[in-house]
Length: 314
Ligand SMILES: NC(=O)c1ccc[n+]([C@@H]2O[C@H](COP(=O)([O-])OP(=O)(O)OC[C@H]3O[C@@H](n4cnc5c(N)ncnc54)[C@H](OP(=O)(O)O)[C@@H]3O)[C@@H](O)[C@H]2O)c1
Image 1 (cartoon, rainbow, N blue to C red):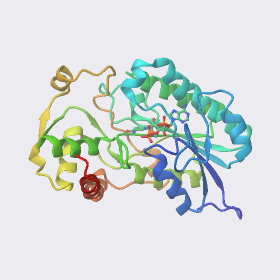
Image 2: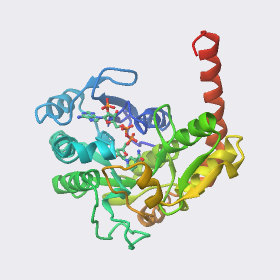
Image 3: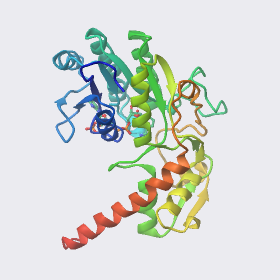
Image 4: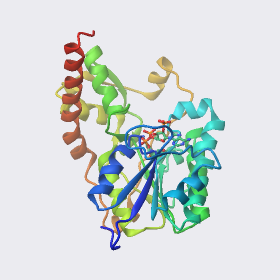
């Protein structure tokens, strides 16, 4: 909990995103006053700020005078970054620097969100915070440049690298699994891509704890435990009321032969949450998170489907 007499004000960039949607209520619950920044107007957005615009973040942060900034805005479409590296650099690398410099100028602490995609996944996992990054995609390279830029502005700022986020109303892997199972009655999922599935709600809570402690430097922050995409899909299927055997194993090579993608993904990007654990921040296992979330995901789908049917649309 914040200890100041006055509630601390925390800007969230990317407030309309998957993580942002969980951060705003998590901050309120912990006694902070969140202020949502987003690329466009919408629910939860107090100010429209394009972080790629070098002239935007400074005046916006001066006007709001926050105590801290949780920087969750990013160009997160991994294949989109490969197709448009200039935009990826402008948002993920230079945009992060703009946010950090503007925050530093008003004396605000920055907690910036990083990614497991800074690692190649070619044999170094599980990765500790001080492992050498070597990204294999434009997304990973520009996110790495962004985290370095933030820590170059002030080494007391923090970067929390996370992975395989799910939860919320947008597109994410468990939702895709349920959608495909509903449409086709089965799904093929790769067994040779391994990481740390992380419920965005659990990450938001853990980030607020990290904010409380004002940690500096790099932290790894995911749900506990690792999984292949196949393991995760089976757990989601079971939790959503499907027979897990409807999820069939395949390999990345076989999948990519059918569905080529521009960006390479790390094969094994498992992270070790060492520094967070050392200060008592230890999110629950991904299995517990999926067991709680998958039935809600399935129920939400049913509610949406019945609303569509009730409205007389196909
Ligand atoms: N999703 C994952 O699996 C994952 C894994 C590891 C790390 N991360 C990191 O976690 C953080 C949050 O990810 P997320 O899943 O919440 O992503 P998200 O749903 O794509 O949200 C990102 C937000 O950033 C906004 N944004 C993009 N460009 C912007 C710009 N130029 N100016 C201002 N806002 C801009 C987006 O707005 P628009 O949608 O309107 O463009 C969006 O609301 C990111 O730093 C991401 O790199 C995510």
